[in-house]
Length: 435
Image 1 (spheres, rainbow, N blue to C red):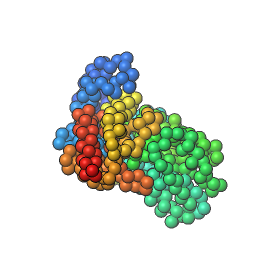
Image 2 (image 1 turned 90 degrees about the vertical axis):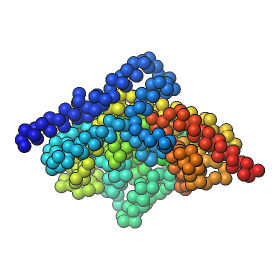
Image 3 (image 1 turned 180 degrees about the vertical axis):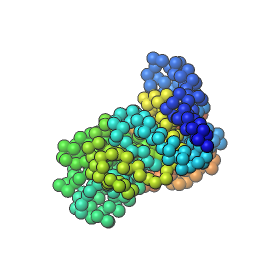
Image 4 (image 1 turned 120 degrees about the horizontal axis):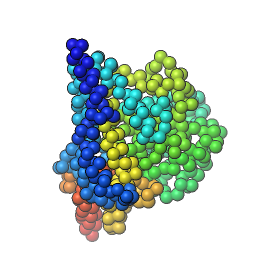
């Protein structure tokens, strides 16, 4: 048994995501390295339209060919190597869970923390690994020592789980939760910052910002809002569920105090993986969402006392990082924006069709909202799927009514041509119905 355990321990370590024996190195590295040589000297924008290059990336995914998945804003599929890593380490865990999970795989979290910090451009001691953006952001929302009468400013266009968390704090603790209302798209940073600034009162303690509005893809000027807020002694919590692994940025660039994201969106990590970042000097004052024996510790790991967790999923995050880094953050952002603009530019002038998202680089990337006059989002979504097998999501939220379309790096131009054809035909048929 001792020799057997030693063997599996060596296997786990040599097959780790950041070792020479990683699945990425075994199965994908050579292909992507060869593809990268073909684009040497090209800018990210030039590479964005190179279909030969992106065909190599597309082959790394296992998406169902019978469905065109354009709802990657909800959750993204993982490349094959990520899926296989999770499966491999799940099998290892079940060889002897208490041994292989707690004594072997648990050791993989620290290298993962380091690699996530490299991508995020921050200190590894500021990063906690958890299950999704909701958990990360709720840790801060419920961990802040806010008192009755303290104000938090958010928007009606924030993610529902975050809105409900703040409302619950208002009910439980008597804080004031103020929601601003934006009419997107807005192509003026100063206008957005001004709306936040005018809402500030002497009671305001924190501003909650959604980096990319999940409904329509509006990119918010987080850094400018944060700088304005800090000048007034106000902290900033950033919901970056849709931006991390999509936009090429470093967390310190945003100038916020707290940050939460899901890794199973554009990073293509295993489903059920997320990350929390807290500025180092603020860790001590945030209470853990789940119990910890040292709740006022300065150690970011106090936010990881989840009990039994999925160690295989954590190992899979590492392979997703390998894949992401091999492509390059700038290239990935440019490609996904290219895909969004590819279809959106083709439909924007069709009679009856309306885009709900800016096509300017600084205000959108992957997500774009689209509607057709006289058709509800639910009916539009159904038509796209039932007739064309295109998976999207209908959005009816506050002042937003549209279908959200979100491509990813595995999306082909043929897929988007099908979308354009579908929108054209649906709009034409509706116009004919109306005479």
